[in-house]
Amino acid sequence: MTSVQTCLWFDGHIDEAAEFYVSLLPGSKILNRTQYEPGSGPPDGPDMTGQALTVDLELAGVPYTLLNGGPQFPLSEAVSIVVTVDGQAEVDRLWEAIVGNGGRESQCGWCSDRFGLSWQIVPQQLNDLLAGPHAEAVMREMMQQIKLDVARLEAAAR
Image (cartoon, rainbow, N blue to C red; front, side):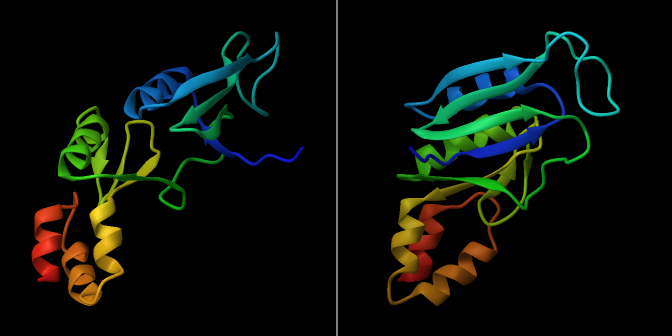
């Protein structure tokens, strides 16, 4: 059987990150945890015996592995988790959970959490509007926003 999942490289705190991530989205859960064996750790790094090596989880049914691999490959906006939600209330809830807990805002619905992972919080309404006849105006409005505002996007489409 073939399966696919995304592995995200962290420099510590993967247990904390996993607990935070599964708290964000309904239908999410931690599946498995492995730890470093005695005397092991990342190359040229400290002994990490007993610390988490990997945490496997599902976010809204999508599988991910968090890898505690050390500082060699930091997270960046080159990889993000896109969460499509229905309505402004859910955009606001997730945005506050991520940014309000040590994360930072970016632009066009992008933010990053306190661990450095980038997220895109996208209302389904944006996708619908971008498929409509006023997509160009909606896109211009979206490019002006930080957290996406459904009412402003819908106004741009009128």
